[in-house]
Length: 324
Image (cartoon, rainbow, N blue to C red; front, side, top):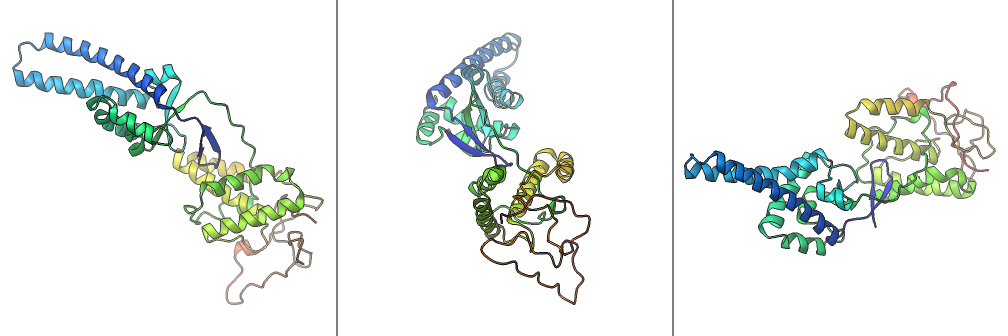
């Protein structure tokens, strides 16, 4: 079982295809390709008998490249990783992150496959597949792909509560490249299960995850913002970036708007809903249970308070509230 992490921090349990099933799929593809190649060659020989020897050799090379090299590349591109042999064996070629392959992936796989499959009769591909932990041949390594079994159990993913609307886009300039997939998974699992946890345990986990995330990004949670709200906002920013990368920005804007207007399903744990940070003179409901609430630090006198330092009166209610 191979655990791949998508851009939404969802773990996909994919079963990498092993050598016997891959060899059978390649054998079926080669039989079909060779049949087409022989048929095309016979037609060309009959129709180009009047040409000189050099022209016939050039046509033979072009036929080989188009049928035995270009054909598999075109089929994998148009079928998103499912050739005839892979379809019969229940296999599919996917990217390392579990997404569908594109033309560049099929091109690299096909070009390297000429050497490791056709010219060496599959010996190099078999050795590479046996050595690799996930059964990948050289074409998969250079293309960043993986052949997996298509018939796998469906993974049920929980609902990730959206952050407060005023926190959406707050971390748009934060560098998330240093955050490992394991931490994204831990944050997602916490957000989807925070309502099922004991309040004290939930608060402690949120503090620890927020500290780890701040250490990786270099951007801690703003003052007065609960750790759970900070985690949800950063997770929302990651998902928005993945949506922009995948769909070109249009759907991402709509997704952000939907998050801003979505209802918040965070538990109140017995506290009334309130904005972030609490109003002056009101005891902070987000202080750690082990320490009293600390007074907010005044803003420097030489600059006006930033919009995110002020607590507007119409700030929407949320459910990011720690335990008593």
